[in-house]
Length: 256
Image (cartoon, rainbow, N blue to C red; front, side, top):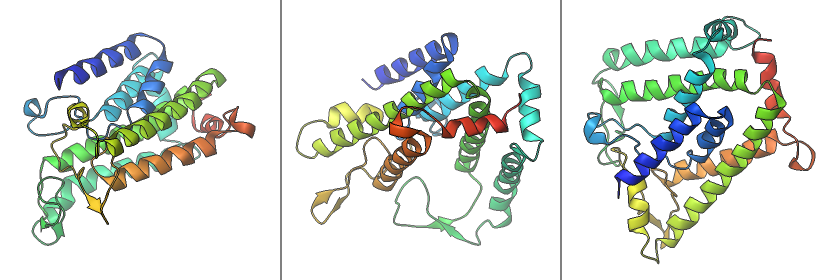
């Protein structure tokens, strides 16, 4: 049962790589609520968790820039101050901090681990999670470059707006399923999407009520996802929510 969602995901991703680029846009936003879903079995990755949205984002980046003229477009955005130079500089700082700071401050400060008991702290030390989180961050930064390149045309901007709405609908649906699992036997349905190797706080109750986590690792992540979905939908929509307007600002960050 756990293998079936993984196969479905990779089949959809293959379709997005071979088919219209808009498929990847829909898949990108639709997979955001699946923050606890490992699309590669953790037993094959040394315990690292690769979730669905970063994999889709990586596919978007590859499809956008691994083509004639793609590298030049990427460098053009990364090296020009009026475009994405500051974001590129942030990525460089992130790499330096990730590689050196855990070693420089090893054993000096306490951190909350992403695995095991979330109520305890452990001394800081270099580990696999440093590298995996850096990879997630770099993919996220690269996806900004990809979106800036992709959303220059009105057709893909319209698809992006619809994909945002789809992502919000999926977030609501997963939250309702998680809420209903407190009184209905739905754990078997949700379990194949909760395969991440890090700690999952999915059964926490406050004042007798279940904290809703959807298919995210814990409630605050799900709440942040819902708020972000609302904010993105409001900021991107024009009058009456019919025309995307905020995404057109990305045009000024990309090459003509």
